[in-house]
Amino acid sequence: MTLCIVSLFACEKESSDSISNERATLENQKIDPTELARNFDKQLPPKELIENANAYRQLDHEEMAIFINERHKMSLEEGATIQDANTARELMLTINDYLQEEYGQSYASADSDLSQSAYKAVIQNKNIQIDQEIINEKFFGEKPCDSSWSPSGTTPVDVYPDLADIEQKPIAITFKGRHSKKGNCYLVFKSEYYNDTLTAKYIYPITYTSHIALGFVWSDEIPSKEESNANDSSKKSLEFMVEESEVSSTYAYLDDAPERFAEDTKILLE
Image 1 (tube, one colour):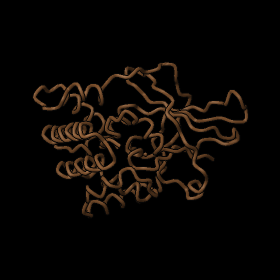
Image 2 (cartoon, one colour):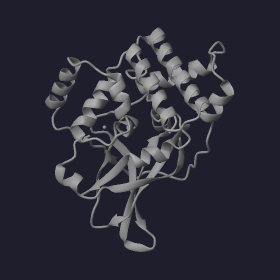
Image 3 (cartoon, rainbow, N blue to C red):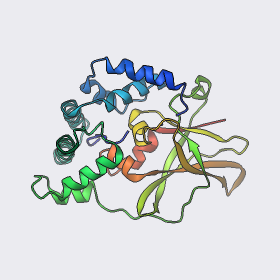
Image 4 (cartoon, helix red, strand yellow):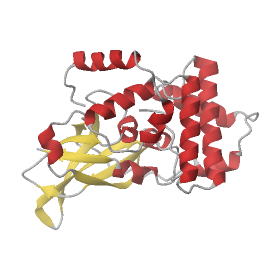
């Protein structure tokens, strides 16, 4: 696995009070960026997932640098090439520094628009000592977008699923392709087929990597549609799209970022 850093961290709330209490509690706890980095890809129970995601968003500039360096160490442990790991680390550290200097934000705390602005500024700055060819090819290379897909509705994201829902077998998703919309590229995902008497209740991130990629917005609604199986009218599947920049930056611009996101995300039915 190459370096997995994040930028942009979704949910039927139990209640706004409980969320506020969780955040208030976390603010009084010491955040361990090394531990957060080590748990970033792990499948977690809902409560711990939310706690880790909230803790991540509180990382300041120095703590985020520790997080980035720990992920770099892990990527080498798991077989990443030194060049890939070092390039990703240098890029993320540079963006983290830029956000601090320009906006007083860390890579973890900055919102999506701010992060996008920062990395564009970083790669355009000729004084940044990063191999531009490697970055453009491996992290910011343009990929074709298919304009043929359009949603017909929305599906909520939920990281507070009922225990009964979790105990049912979650429906897996796969990466389908890219879709162009208003100049932006979106990733389209497709679930396994399920009985047409059921419907998709919500999209469920099982790691806080995918939770952050889905937008870190409570009760978010993701553009989606249900499609019938052409070979079996009793089956259908859910398709939904997420902005590519959200997924690619969360998964450190890995070549297989869409596939990794799919592994970390499930559909629950009702």
